[in-house]
Image 1 (tube, rainbow, N blue to C red):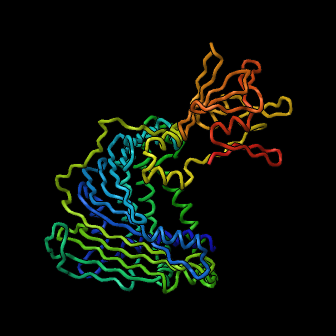
Image 2 (cartoon, rainbow, N blue to C red):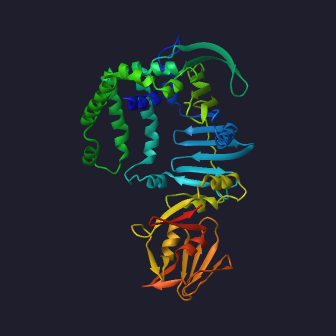
Length: 493
């Protein structure tokens, strides 16, 4: 039961942060929010900051993390939504007194990202993304983009219908400055609640949903209508096999959800009291957890300004006593003539796909750039590979020394391999450093960027395959070998 309650609570928190849902004064909150999901184009800006408050037991490392996060901020100076499928973002990530500018452009084909210090902007096509996450060729990501907004409206309408208002919710008319310095009369929606009230909203929310058979079935039908067509390469017979018929999908889906809600609500009160007795729950859903948000609507009920503060109190066993999120944004030129700003790709693009290596991305940035340093610090170039029996990379033993094929070593560490049959020389290009390693069959001598290195034994050939001593070979490519309990791993830091 506790697990089921924990699953329900994040959804309610998200919805409450967004809005109260019933009419407040002359403001129809639900319809105002749905109207804003229908916006076709706009310009906006936003700032987003996070902060952590260390607890008394926080370690020096915990405090350092808090200091770094508390000095960070996401600043979007210009967001231009030209259409549902075309958008640009220009801004920066600010951290520790530094500023990392970025420019992102999205269209029907994919996403282009330009970051300070990049030699070429990075491009990720939706087709490459689909392949990377394992979507088959019948799954149409471009169609998905268009369908998401419509389905989001259906979901929002259903959930907003059932979420009760917070006790402290109000709507009034205020004069306030908007982007450009103009002062306008707008309707301000103000919501304030704490963790205790948030917890009390769960049961009426779930009870209301459980009673809405028609609404649930309509939502399931909307899911079928919006997402089944994405499988454009599938016949109706294949769709029926995957989803079942529409009526069957809706009826069986409703039956499963209804039974789950009935089970959840059956002993809700008793289990809820047990749930609240937990000290961590009392902290997280106590008076120190607070949500405060203001949304300003113009005369056409478009949201023009938003401010939000969310503070979550954390349990005593945590290294931090509180987590805070603060966001401010403004919007203008709603449904106007907006033209997104493409990233300049005239100097070429780095096309990223599922075969792109960490080194390829790293070498695309100047070594003194913030992204290069962050990638190195974050461990983005780290790699651990198992070799030997039951792995993809087999080893052999000769004269009590473990060898690995040069081809497998290169594959394991993403190195580029070139073979000169005439000289029996192998050239490896290190994925991370770009260093060039040269090896010769039947020789202990190796070179790294022209500098001599001696191996403990010759490079050998066995049945046409070239092998190098494992530890030495890994070392040439900036990696180490660890052996423990019969398992051998190559580790790159």
